[in-house]
Amino acid sequence: SVAISTVLIASLTGYGLAKFRFRGRNTVFMMIMATMMIPFEAIMIPLYMVVMTLRIQNSYIGLILPFLVSAFGVFQMKQFLTTFPTEFLDAARVDGMGEFGIYWRIVLPNCKPVIATLAILSFRSQWDNLLWPLLVSQSDKMKTIPQYISSFALERSTDEGAMMAAALLASIPMFILFMSLTKYFIGGSAIYESRKG
Image (cartoon, rainbow, N blue to C red; front, side, top):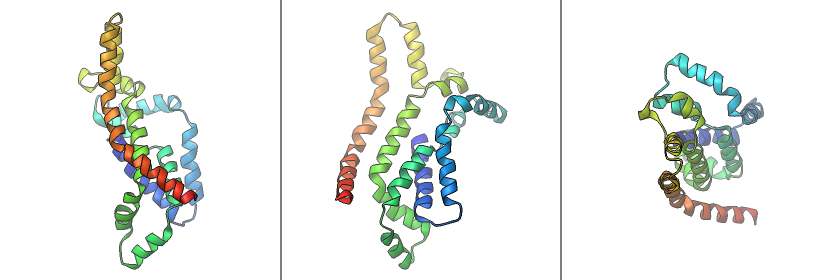
């Protein structure tokens, strides 16, 4: 869910910042980029207090909500869409297509390489996230895979074979996602080489 929301929100934001002219566009972009300089550890406690105030601890909303979009994703999508030919968008507008239709039917299908990269990076960062779920989810049913691996390592500290088996099982979804999106990396490198040439 975090990977999907990151791709959708970051692509919408990047499209707006790359292809629309409005006052304060560069200021908005620089403010988004400034959030990348703030480490998560600096906002972790205030964020936890917000979660406690909203009473969404031990819930999927509490795990997902703080990571719905990333500044890096917005940066990545904006930089990719800056090089996207504006003539295609103008031709679609002349044909009477709305802005959301242009985004959904023209922009997104042509952004598969950067979407695949962003989806993999977002999925991996949340799949491997241990610190935030450790704070928010206290019940056993809300524990994530890294929490179980860390507790399993404490319980089975002398059984290296079982620990390696648990780590291998935890890496299967990441492996499947990467292998299923590999073809878009190849297509993205071909697009990059053609634009470069």
